[in-house]
Length: 312
Length: 276
Image (tube, rainbow over all chains, first blue to last red; front, side, top):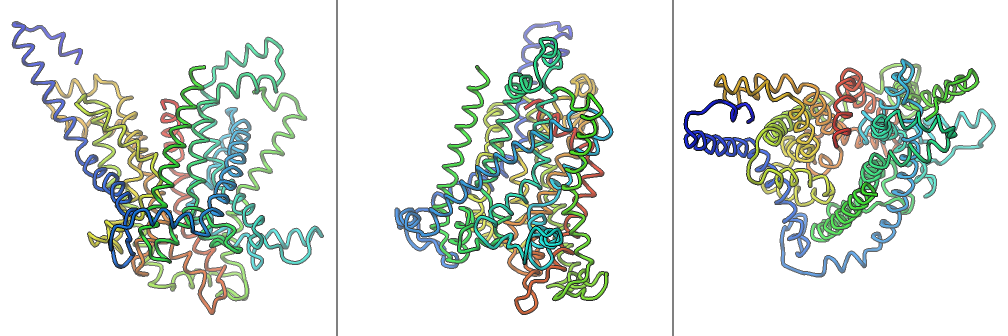
């Protein structure tokens, strides 16, 4: 724009009219470029949002479609669903465990590779390779890795005399949770390392130099400078990790199918079962709507907290 | 942080620790490759090392060529849709001021707030109504939709990083805005495009939930669901060998693409995160 307004103009009015016409044209062109995306979002994002709310009010079978309005039956039936509350508790437990481990581990890795050298470049690549794998591929890999039939850990421990007989990595509720957590931490640690690495590199070196001059110990520097300065990156990492973990599906669907004894059923698995095994899309939609509301609320809270923290 | 390698002892323990971690990270990958060619009871590879498990994989269901073809088509379609929408949208958001611009950008980003799983049930009903279940295009639309917030944001900041003089001289020379986008802007945002394309490709290639719901016809399936189904084959016995062969086939293109494009991927990611 600036270059246009500096061009000499003979008459003020023609200049102004030209400017207005130009602005309007730019407005229209700009809007036109967003039209395909807007259409896409209306069709595939806004419409399903409206539809999921509508479906939750109806007796809506997988094969029958909309039978009749039945509000609030779908929501009441969730309360009575025997899988629901255990699934909520399990999903929350899993989310806390994974978030604490992934953030801690991601930060540790970021600190280990933050210096610039050939070796740290290799390390970054190594830690990022599992991130490029799909979650389904990683889960299928782990399915063999944790199996008593071909898994490598059991035999190694046995050879060292540390275990006797096959270890049931997925056989007990606790083992299944821990094994799945191990898989998820292995697969995603590099991703959180990358986010926190970006944050670390955004901290001015002057701060560290000043701390060193003041004779701060490594721990003091970490507590007083690194952690507070990393807050935005840590908040972003927390939002991504909490959201992702609350929606866990692939890893449990592939690794445990909810076994043993429905102890590893997540909330999204309950949605899947309602929809495609019990063929009740109405209750599945009601569940989806609850999950949506909880996550939007949680994200809003976290963003609010993040903003508030920034102002301090 | 104080450098962990200021003295010999520190340097040695740093290298031992990081070396050990590197081995732990690579071990499962190396193991899966080894397991896919190792002899094992109740698999096709019973005696000696060889590619028997890959033969089982090749012959599973409609055959690996069909499933691989579906997966490639799904991924390319997703990349194409994501490219078109995010480039046009990103260009508009970066370079034009128009009524509703900020609201529209926020709407695009708000897709991130809504859980994927919550929308799959209504999306399934809608695609079913349009005859787009058991169609790779239907799944591509869904996967591309969820790529949109990241891709549009990425393209917007990529376009914003280009100096304005470049396009203004072209505009004054009488180029249309689309010609400017096509000839001048696109070549300048290549790192952003590569990042967006790589993310879209990996997302589609690895997508599990949407194909599980929407591609129920075995001849339409893509690799992740097909390999997950392949496990229960012969009389309830689990074919771990063929499963790990499937993992290798699924993971190999991802790892190769990632290693080839790592420079773009990390740079694109970093520029995005720093600005955000």
